[in-house]
Amino acid sequence: MSGRRRVAVVTGGGGGIGAAIAEDLGRGGWFVVTLDPLVTLDGSERLPDPEETTAGRILAAGGSARASSVSVTDVEAIGSLFQELVDEHGGLDAVVNVAGITRPTFFARGTDEDWLAVLAVHLGGYLNVLTAALPLMAAAGHGRVLGVTSGSGWRAADAGAYSCAKRAVAALTWQLGRQPPPGVTINAMSPIAATRMVTAALERARQAGGSGGAGISLISMPDPEDLGPLGAYLVDDRFGWCTGRVLFAGGSEVALVDEPRLLEVVRTDEVVSVARVLDAVIPSAFAAAEADQASRGGSNPRFGPIFDEPAPAEAAVAEVAPSAVRSCAVVTDRPLLAASISAALEARSIACHRVEVAPGFGFGFGAAADALGSVVATAGPMDAIVVALAGGPPMTTPTGSWAQVLAEHRGIVEHIQADAGWCRAAADYAASADRPIRLVTLTDAATSEGRSRGQAATQLARAAAGATKGRITAFAASIETSDEGASRPAGELVAHLLGHPEATALAGAELVVGAGWIGIRSHPRPTGSITYGGPAIPDWLDATLREIVGAGGRPPQEQAG
Image (cartoon, rainbow, N blue to C red; front, side, top):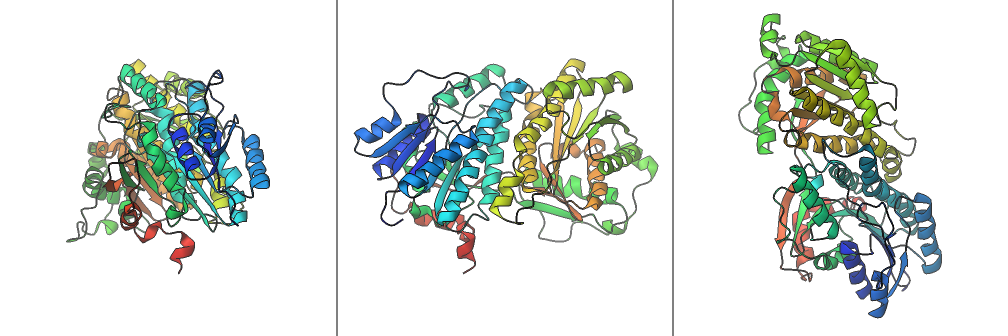
């Protein structure tokens, strides 16, 4: 950096955690830009100009800073600001994206507009920041990006759009961090602190009677100021050895949050009966793995010659299908997948009613509700709903590049909103008809955007039962291959989830359909924690984090050596 002052942008730097990180960076000699339009907690109105600003406090303490009112939702303004900083100061060394709003969004509550607003800031805004920052950092050969996710994005919580957005931010971190531009690191912090936004969200969750604030106490939370030193450390060159990681930050503690990993996988290609394989393996191996969050394999083989055995006789299949599931609405714009789902359901004596949708249909909650209502009016009550909407096409940028990951995520806000619209339609129908519903969301996850969207769908599924008083039993599966041959096993998986009496053990699990196999992944979880009493960072923190993270924390360019 030729001896110049380092430059950092902190979105949401006008208060709370963002202000704490900005001020700590200022004390460390950085030139800090606090990017914050200073709006109300729900983002709907501008606040009066404060008597004291974060930038003003940094300047008063002898540091260098300026304030900007640009919003993360304004991609052109962000791009202009970042380029301006490079032109004036010689570079953009770090971006910390803390900006956020809070509105009442839950699995079964919240308006279409509130869902879109929360997704647009927490996820769309972060994508805007990445789109503007990464090309500049790539050109410079150096940079640090720190996103902000949340425990609501990796624990089971009824936080609706917020959970979906924060899970997608974590998914983005894990994907981009594996292939960042040379010299650039991309990590995320999952903080907990007694901020105004957290206080408002917890109170709203408690009033709604949902699970959004379960197990969280404001009394034990640190103050936002306690997170400043760790946030500054995570974009310092001391932490430049690590990329693609999510770290929980609790003021006096830090923990590594591990990404979802395959626990059990079973072959589905070149078998006599996929249904037979799934009926044998899922109740024993997959259900156990979901309950334990670990495989029970590694000892004597658990299954006989299931790959060579035919499906059970028709009478036996009829016995498997519970009487409660006899009719299903299938919402999809993928004809081959629709045919496979229909065939598998009908083999289990479950009537299939197709909901015809055109690409882009159902982005609004009202449109999904109307379409479902039309099916019920024509075919009678539904016991289950399958949603399998196509995602965006793969981009033409180089395969496996950070640019491809960003490009493929362009439509993710709308796609998550579409999936959520059908979840809402299912919840409203289950409540109005006072009947249980099984809901399966099949995500088109052959692209990086699809993989992030699939993880968001899993977050919704995990909250469904608690948010609907048990009326909705929700399943989520990602089809992570463009191979058309995956449609048949995907259809058989849907039929198992709707027709097998023990399938409810997989509600909220992260199921995966690959090219020739079906698997189940773990949920994100802490794999190692450090308690140091905070907020000051001890000298030994770096060494202990390296051991917890392991070799996988090193940037790819170093791993090659």
